[in-house]
Length: 356
Length: 277
Image 1: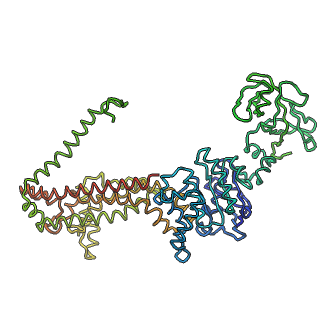
Image 2: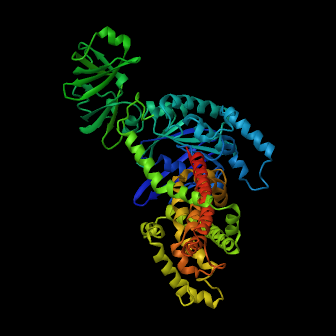
Image 3: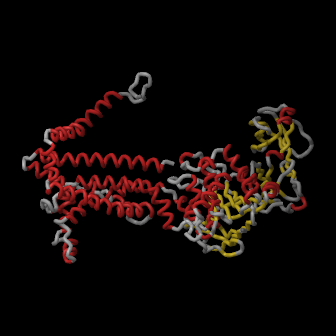
């Protein structure tokens, strides 16, 4: 079932959590709502679920207006960050809950419930834990119970609010991959909220990047990473170096940073932010002739496949550089060495927000 | 063990503090109770049975236990309701109301007794109104139940409140997304979670109501066989220099109290188990 959110606004007192947000989730898609805290991503998810009612705008499920439909009747599966399991019930009873509370006419028989719950517990790999209580499970296991419970009612839409937010790094990684595989298996339209960009980019078919109650960009992980629509998106997705410069057609090369697409540059000089990712900076020990920034190495972190360096330029800016291990060894540089940094790829955003 | 030589605690003095604890508990609690038991043992079995099965004694037990049961049942229902209101809603005066709940704890029972009698007597504000309906409140078993309900009101509220506060809003939201109605969410999710606490509060309220003396003697009228409660009967026997009789009646009450204490502890253990997350 597809979801369409159209012109939704939601206020809490004087705080506007969502400003006129519109979004379309396709059938069978796994979509991530990504943004910093307070960006409205959880509110948007809760509006879709019917746990919050919007002050303006509509929510459509499969083309029909569901804005006034009660959360009970929306048939959504919702997974909470802190699991929200029923702690006086066993794992089995938790998963069976949605089936047991159905009106008598629609309620499956005991055997059907048992069969269905067992099937779901196998799906989340907890078939041996049916008689345990939530308190006896680890965080990752609890979240899988919560997921099985949400899937028990055969929801048309699965909504997950920071599903892995309360788990430690290693468990997160495992569950992430597992969620991806699960989605490929059951193919229910899913939306999940996260503030972790790696999680969003790794798991989702499409990513929605939110900021201050508005949607900044919607696209595939590749699109949003390679072609960020705004300075915010560029900044939010991964580490990035920002250079504040005045840029114009007449002086495309400011402070030895050459701007690459001179055709679209304005004639008059305007303040701009130039964004360069750390791995898009070349580092060398001598001047190569290309535009370059001179500086000194201030910090080296050689752990991991990429060596992370911090270079303080002659203008006093600290620039993050990432370079492969071999290249780093070849250069033979260390803290205090004089280096020249050349950008390979950059993006310019003028301070009115427009990208070149 | 904190007292062993191999492991030293940061805080010194396990021995003196433990000795003091035992001495204090012994002096204040155990020795008087032991004396009571010893006193009763001196009685012959027939003597004991005679005192215990006397119609006046049995009537007092029936009244006390029955009244306490009704009072604590009423408090279980309304205490839960009050706890719910205090936890779930934000309204002006909530803090004041919350403080007011403790009033029966703080008020001297005699003061409570006088106040309740004044209101529920046939000449009183509510008593007069009830009298017109043909209901006698003060100087009747109903008055006793009212006084017992008053003094045992805080227990259910104070045991249920923290457990209710502990229930996550998300748990109810989860139930709603799974299609449960509000009624079903209450009966299947919230109520099972708070039931141990409600029962523990109920048992404490019951124990308190059984032992209540001060406020009840004012409102009951103290008619032997009709509105005489057990603690008063003990008092009467003592005043008649019938120490053995008083001891026999008291001993049964003591055994009952121990049983209640045991049940309360079991309930609290259950409550901790089922809410541990």
